[in-house]
Amino acid sequence: MTQAPRAVIFGCAGTRLDAQEQRFLARAQPWGAILFARNIETPAQLVALTSQWRDVLGRDIPILIDQEGGRVQRMRAPHWRDWLPALDQSLHSTAPARAMYLRGRLIAAELHAAGIDVNCAPLADIACAQTHAILRNRCYGLDVDIVVACARAMANGLLAGGVLPVLKHIPGHGRADMDSHLALPVVDTPLQELNRTDFAAFRALADLPMGMSAHLVFSDIDPDFPATTSRRMIELIRSEIGFSGLLMSDDISMQALDGPVAARAQAALGAGCDIVLHCNGNLDEMHALADACPPLTAAAQDRANHALALRSAPDGADLVAAQAEYGTLMRVA
Image (spheres, rainbow, N blue to C red):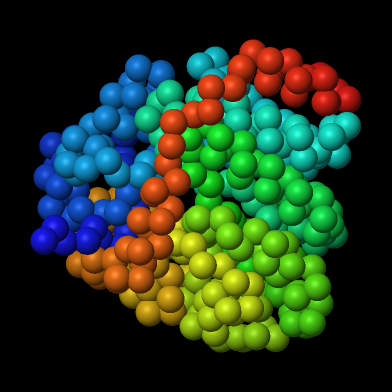
């Protein structure tokens, strides 16, 4: 019987896997890979890299990317489309949800052609007055209804193009006034208000196949631990929000978390995350995480299998027509 892959997703350092990385990855067997701008030069190079990842691991691994469009997109012009930030698109479109569907479908076409089959989008975080600038214009709207409609549309556009969506940042990062890449945000909003707003958006999208946790403290629920490492918060995500998909951590090396990366990973998995995400390609950290992250649990493997079963061929949409329609829905060029 083949052992389940390890409960971790790794990045890599450059535009190809070097010999040392190949030996390590073949032995470590992470569940999947994630790519960043440092890994991307040209379409041909990117196809070669995604193929190399799968060859080295000996299976059709999921390959992830953050291609939200706007400020956070790893594949850029001249080889791939550039996009408005999501909030700008939503505020300037005559039909925000339809425009977001087309955005998702067109992004999916570029990802699928490169061998990338998972996109870390949509976001269901709600922009508000205190939303930190690192996130604000990445959000899809200012209220629950528009955020849910646009996030659902983005997810559907990705799925139609053969790419799996990852819902983020569960259970909601919009009220954070700090950048969790650099520090630990604390949200003091009462649970009743969170249930009416931030959590409601994720509850409406809880059927999506994969999600990503948020590195922030909700002081009215668990004042001691950020959601990623909080058993109380993960239980809320599962039972009260109702998310039943594969739950990965946000990048485990972000400074919102403290301690060695191995201890962070163990805390996230112990709290109930299915998989740990590690992005920076640092091989020393990856060795430590390989030792700390066991194979997926049976429950996590079932959720992973359900998600990966949704990978399918693109729907054959007319992409030229989709691009033209997108243009008609925007009030600005």
